[in-house]
Length: 430
Ligand code: UD1
Image 1 (tube, rainbow, N blue to C red):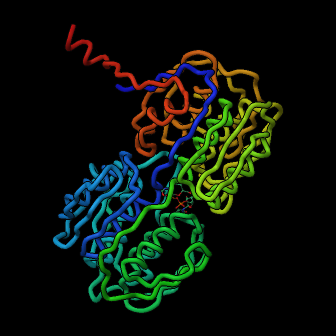
Image 2: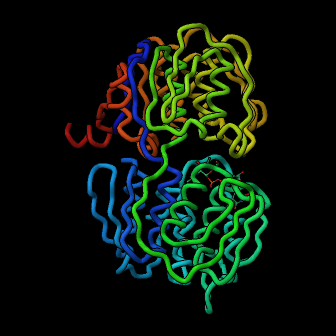
Image 3: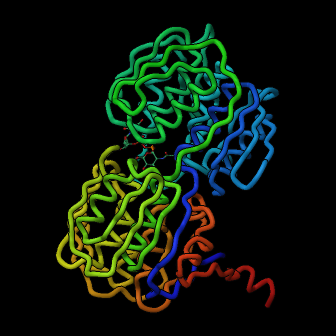
């Protein structure tokens, strides 16, 4: 088992460059299927979710060439239809984008229900409602989603009962080559929705309104290849910003879109962190005391739920009482007992509100990365804590953060990845 071992207490200095957005690239990769041509994708992050998605695409017959560490050529001219079974789909949440992409490409899809982080119930009813509304026959049985259409999909008007990133993206993927006009109302507005729309349009699609709550898609017969660069990762950037805020120091976060970071910048500033925005970078400085603030997670442009654990880790060191409300997921505070092992004083009331009484110091301990962003919160707390913190189950972190050890070490963190044999291996060698 690999663990991250952090000797806390170092202030962070220098600069760190952010990679491509995980939640964009996991939609862009399946979208390449729709082109049935050659696409070159740049700024692809070196994370596990990308490797898994590329593996699935390879199984479907896509020919994938790595041109350099962040650039891939994906040739989907010779793809063939296949069922995507559970052992593959369970490895990432975004495997559900294969339903929309394959339905749009082959007129059918059979994909196992997705895996991903456990925040309580994660329904996909709105994705299915969208496919049905486009005229697909949809059935869920034995953990598999089957969707198919005889005469092709037909554009229609779809109202999303909840603002859902996944359902908005999935309907966009299915609708780009449908006959006629599709209108998605109450659409999600996250930066990765806009990125997908831009990418689809670069391939010849006709998608308008992404970034607002009404997206209009005029179906086209064919798409074609293109070259495209994935947007910077808003959450990776926010995580490094919160880390500098917690540990203290002066770090410039490069290759970001400051507009995507507005809610995070606003909250960090409220806590007493000094932030300077440039065109494609933000400088984060924190030398004084951290002060409490209240945060409520919301769909974009609200404060992102994927930054909630990281801001809770930071607020555990802010003077006074902070209240964090989780309004997107039913159960996203399960990691809190890991932070309390480090000495944080946090009470979760119900399942959607955390009351954080700031403490002066955290102290190193052995904790678990219970999911991807919870793992990021453990890193932030470990960097700010006195002494040694060991983080287990770091495969969650590696799903979404590229070169995390190298990047933090480059700004002065004392962090190592260590391999520990598990009990079976020890017995084997005894
Ligand atoms: C995506 C992100 C995830 C992030 C979330 C919210 C990816 C791969 N994952 O997840 O990191 O936390 O957006 O920003 O991009 N809902 C329904 N029915 C549905 C779909 C969703 O009721 O069919 C509800 C969910 O229970 C949740 C809310 O809508 O309460 C938002 O979920 P959604 O935006 O769909 O999240 P994901 O796309 O799964």
